[in-house]
Image 1 (tube, rainbow, N blue to C red):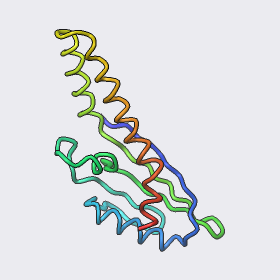
Image 2 (cartoon, one colour; image 1 turned 90 degrees about the vertical axis):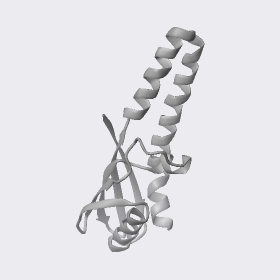
Image 3 (cartoon, rainbow, N blue to C red; image 1 turned 30 degrees about the horizontal axis):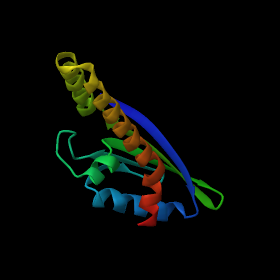
Image 4 (cartoon, rainbow, N blue to C red; image 1 turned 135 degrees about the vertical axis):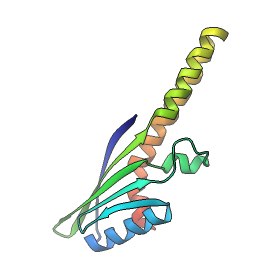
Length: 136
């Protein structure tokens, strides 16, 4: 099960430079570039949600997405549409719920922590990814 999100940002770079930097970033982070044109880049993540990764990788890794680049006068609008799988998080929540039924409802506090962790991941990608790509 996947959830889709969007992020927009205007940058003061020509569309060609933005496209080059985006493709370079995606290749560096081991994404598969499915399709590339002057105005769009489609990509897919190679990591499965079941693979153990470092904390930093977890907070910045997307399952799949699309960069749409639009030139507006002297700026370029970068629109990132991406999806994140929530299967692993749902399994964790179900385990916590089942454990709380048998061990006590105090364990439900852990569910709140896992939900906040996923929200932080979504906000981290939305607020920082485009800036990280263009500053590299």
